[in-house]
Image (cartoon, rainbow, N blue to C red; front, side, top):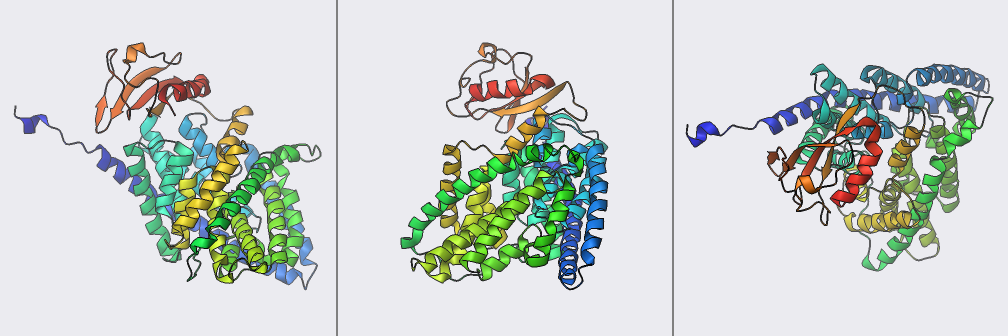
Length: 512
């Protein structure tokens, strides 16, 4: 037998990309329709409140609608608690092996519940739910093909990437967000599948919404070098406000829980009713904030108006998210960042320290900085805003502000907000079904304790089994004398009940 006969062609990556593309196309359609319905719902609600300014009896209609929505969505939350909130912590938990749920009830209830909650004008984002919708499509695809284990998680991650890509038309940043913040894995098979899925989903969403970037802000001046010192101050302020955001958003659910007269599933009634004054006086700021960001970027209002908008949106977004409605904080975070950036720029202009022409630059960079601090995903923040705004001129200001905001939150003891939300949910009663054993991947980083050791000499966490080592293009079945090298990816079978302990132990061993 010659060498050509011995050599087998490996189609695994081509197959993974093909599956990612198919999932991306399906998720792209689902999320694009989701996004379209929400935008039409928001326009309808804004029109409704403008009419209510002239016909006050319509406010009674809104109260009735609020009660009906509360009862309906509350019933779904009680039946399927996995549709609660953003959905990103649930997806992250699923990829970590900590959470499991049935895909079909989550898919349709998250879709309909998200349209009703976000489209009603509440300050909730569509991006978190879009990630969960895409991930659920990937889960359903895996279930239909009877794919399990690590390959199943890759498909779920690719669906999540597709969901965010269709929501933001940002395929590169979407792939990176899933790798950096959700999956925490940069292996080749994961990123090529996620990227293929994101590109396919973005291709679909352009048919619905066109090629114009989601947050297209036009400006002609780059930030002068002598103004870069202000970026450091802006990053510090964003870090401080970002840490404040983390503290409040992680506690607001507990504050609602203290309302003994109202079951947790029906807390949304408070948010719906209290939306009335905002709808009557500031209907243009309703919703996740996409329209508001573009408006502020084009022509920023005065200092007092921006301050009022920030306070109102901060309070009401917390109220809405704390109810557990199917809606996220992704876009609301970017909106608050944009308002803070515009406010910062307008103050500098008022004090004759900057030109009005650079205010849009502070608006754009503050979006990235605020998100980088709260999510602690700076690379995603930089790429995301670059793709959403549609220009490369602001890369250096984005990097400076994102890094300073990230470090400020880190010094203040902040953790990635979605990971913190997942930790909170895992402390509560576990819902759904769990498998007794799951598979986890651990890359070997520089200065890892196990670098250069034979597998028999490693003090592996109790109950784990090393089943595979990925080394570049090779897949190694380990033996006792197999030497672990820097850059390897270790695949371990882990008992379901010991996931947290194993993850902490492996971080010490692999140098993460």
